[in-house]
Length: 432
Image (cartoon, rainbow, N blue to C red; front, side, top):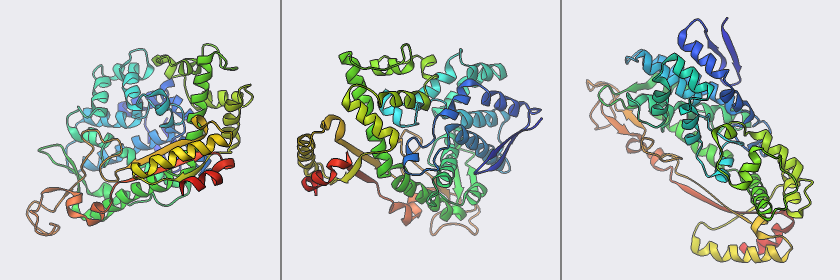
């Protein structure tokens, strides 16, 4: 029987168990490693700002797989897509976020481990059901999927579709996060970009026909504004600051031997003790573990941890003050703010958090090799209509060389102080 997923962005996502590739995807979705993603919020703590942002990495991953399927279908009309490349692309799209920890990117700062490395570990480990399902389908498939995630797979456009300036991950999360937060910044003309996608047969480079230039500009602007208005929103960042302070205080209490509550033998016990997590431990770790312990810590004997945990549970978050970007101006202000916070009875180690958020809108967020360029094809190879200006027809050109809009999307930095509402007015006097 056909497997249907009703999706708020893409409507119906359909998989046919009578087709071997679809049957594999169904089997992967049903593994515990993938089902775990239901318990990890796609946007971390954004729900403290946008109450609709309750969607999970599970729903996003299904959407990414669906868009990869549509992209490969479209490319297949113009460029031969080998069956093995098609299944690698669809599987990599589905499983690309397996390694996310609780509240998505927030926990990476606490564990000091990138989620993509955890994804590779899950795929490579023969004890995981995901690995076993892949290997049963084709013993070479686990390594091929890993290679596509790490940009080692050939043809290279498969890896580009998984992770690049123009990938199915961004295609989905911009539309999904825009819908679920209720903002309009993430909307762009996906259908026109899809129609204009192509692959250079000589290099395997993914490109977009110049006819879709304005749709691509809109897509890049959507990402720019989503970062400025959603992903780097001051309330979201303040919530992250409280969470980081909670963990910092809990770790300190563990070192002192005075933490009142932690489940013995739990993953949280290992995290607080600073022990590297085994893969089995990591796969048991999700949003529920974090929230359970924080709710317990709201009754902790330690007044600092109790206060921080209570603030987090009841959404009495820190406020923010903007700081100058220039370090020479910022250093003295932070020192004075720290002294004022301490004089008001709040330990600045936990109640005065410096927050820096930065993005380079066109060049990539993570900035690994292979993510740096987005190419337009200037026109028909015969030099007919569609060529751009004086450039030769059929050439691949970085969009920044053609678009003043993209060239104008300069990088930015946001520097803020996060601190309790009780002291913000007094500290403001020191930093304004």
